[in-house]
Image 1 (tube, one colour):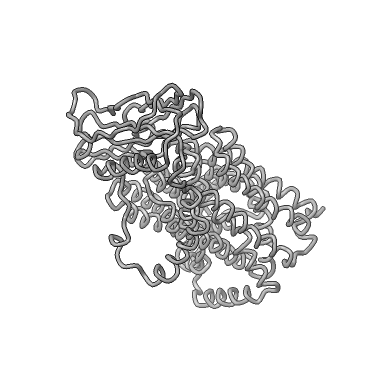
Image 2: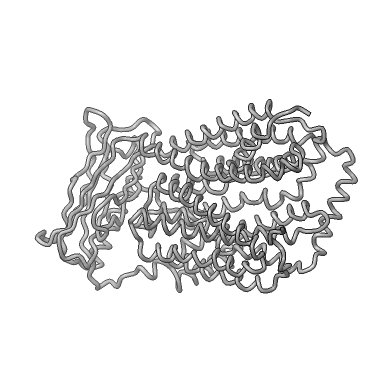
Length: 611
């Protein structure tokens, strides 16, 4: 056996194990959101990426039958690097969504296979004493991978988004009682190019809106006129009509469409936001902007306009994302601002438009990750030990028969029904929340989101959230070792579910304070870390007995399935009923978790530290 200190390879191996998983499950969601994909498609297609972890127990014997664990680790790290590079290369492509998804599938299968090989190699490459000694080290570096993926990489992408474009556009909107009311007019004439660097040209950098109310019909007319002008000039993407989308499938005609209509009728966000035609609303003002010169051919300049500071009673109601090309650069893109009907005194709000190259930012981010995995491949190629016991199993037929016997024995376990329901439904609420939480933070306030930047989300979820999650998990493990899983499982069920209420609060109050938002996320993540301890401990408890390693692997498949299926429809549901109603739905989905724990059979002594 080649001698190599565990300190030389255990930390790097588990850093390499955690990074692709968080990229597939979390980074992909944020990337697609910033690239303009709908919540429905994001949740559906990124949830499908759980499938390799769902079926991982079925192909895990191949890792034993073919080659060594060391070989699988090194080859999978090369494949992971290739997948990351493929994503980076295809992000600028016209059909980037399909191409990047294909490479995410390669990444997901490679990552799941790497998990099998790495965990097996850990047991082969270390003595029992060292396995116990380094279990905390491997967990720590897996957490560091989470922080790197959800935090540092997202912050890097956000910094590149902000720093790769033209100087920010500053727009000041004031509300003044002394201002006379008058409906704004749209000028759709074309402009000529000017000398100097490429920049945005505003029709006015300061907009003053009257506090005098106007009819909802007049307000709608202005918004529709601005939208029609922007769509005509290709400055915002036009929605795909049902006719353009092709003939609907049987599922759409008989199931999806009727269900959507019923949900829209009773819970739809449009229903709650509708205003009677005769009612008065806050006054409206418009600002147009165009480029000073045409950009390069086939180049897109994307301007994202967000609230920056000032009174939240002045909002941007149209024109949050505008796209300029060499064909429409000289036409005004219209942004519509509206004052709250309650405003009756002076107020000022500042908006900022960032035109960073989002495509370039995410391509560079994935190229950085690809380069990192090339380094992992080269490093582990030379540094990983060569245990004598790391050999392919020669008796393949016997092993397959043993696998079938082991799989059969799993489904003969006592208390199987409640246990499977627990594995699938204990995180029913969380499996939907996790897909939409970061999208809610990123979405514009016009779309009922909190309008945070990519870097803000990276800091909140990737650092503050992960720290809170880790502290919750450590506390859960410590307390479970004192009085056991059976005593704490009710408290942990409360902890994993009740903190989800913070998202109901955020969606209703819509705070702008970074501290408040980060604190709410930290509370939810701490509760999740504490409550998830019960899930992990019951997985271990149920797997106890002969073939516990194989049974535990089967349980992880059910765990991934419980995350995959609810996540698939979560984005579709949210886009129908809105964020507020969606988070209320998430709280309703916590009920199965509370119901099932009473039917679990748990040894009262399980988890208690023995003297």
